[in-house]
Image 1: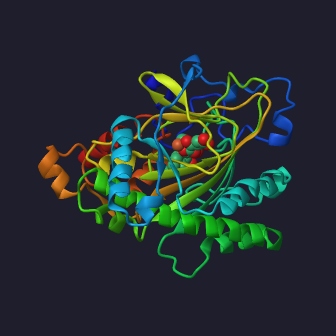
Image 2 (image 1 turned 90 degrees about the horizontal axis):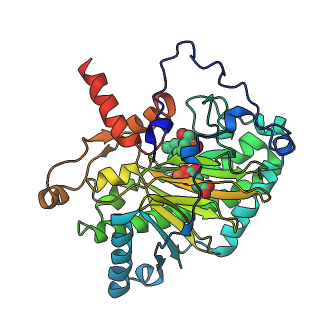
Length: 377
Ligand SMILES: C=C1C[C@]23C[C@H]1CC[C@H]2[C@]1(C)CCC[C@@](C)(C(=O)O)[C@H]1[C@@H]3C(=O)O
Ligand SMILES: O=C(O)CCC(=O)C(=O)O
Ligand SMILES: [Fe+2]
């Protein structure tokens, strides 16, 4: 895996060396598919374009017994999670407590937004430094290797109590005609909060540490919720929906439609994650890798696009509150040896990914080195 090709330490805000300028491309999904010539900004290096040849053998974990307090079922679920996280950090869950009709509505309701005219989508364009809003191929952030996707992101705070911040975002940003859809995503985030906190308990049990340690760390955390739309592309073999990366967050809970596209880099080859109706895909990210003192792996993954079919996914990116110190439980350090990563705040890593560094497969290590070099200046 040629990581150098995808490691871009964002230059300080000097004149860009690259003749292409950020923001010179407008990703109009309704027109892009009909375009004769693929803009070069969307073409990825050959090293990133190797196709997947097999399916990932991640566990499908039934959470019914865990949620009912069954000790044997909980231990079994934790063991499956442990095996997956020692290897690639991906697993799928069923009987996850998220209503299947709600998942279906959240998946289908993306259509109402992504089919809007570009001008309407740009009316909620994500501003630099903000987490909420619309992005077309991140064309205002990057000048090459642009992802072939549109995204709508919004924030969900775990301790927002009765304040329906997601419903409020949709109504305020998109107006009355999106009020009902806003409530679907509000309820979806409410449900995924409970699931994500339950998974934090299972992760603690799987690491044989205090079962409440991680749950407590995230009880006042937040999620970046993101709707992803990957239009079909005639040159699907030259573009990337989402390029190779590890998620910088602690945990990602993803729902994908039945169009394959999510792939994980395991045993030196790309392996596709099988879409399973009603199941949710879970993967740990860089922040949890640090919280496990490097015992569990945050794994490189990507999303490829399809020549004929549009692909949509919902990604719920779980993070601790900005000022929370990311530090593994002491009992893990005592048992498993020296610290692999220094303490850091999630806000520091987030800012690194938003202002200085394009997330890839080496984000956490690059962040640690960058922070060290900034401290020694
Ligand atoms: C903290 C985050 C940054 C990204 C969204 C969340 C978790 C995943 C990150 C991302 C998807 C990794 C691939 C690159 C990225 C730029 C993207 O394709 O969207 C990343 C997100 C982002 O920086 O907006
Ligand atoms: O859309 C997908 O299947 C994966 C997207 C992803 O990995 C991400 O947004 O971090
Ligand atoms: Fe990801």
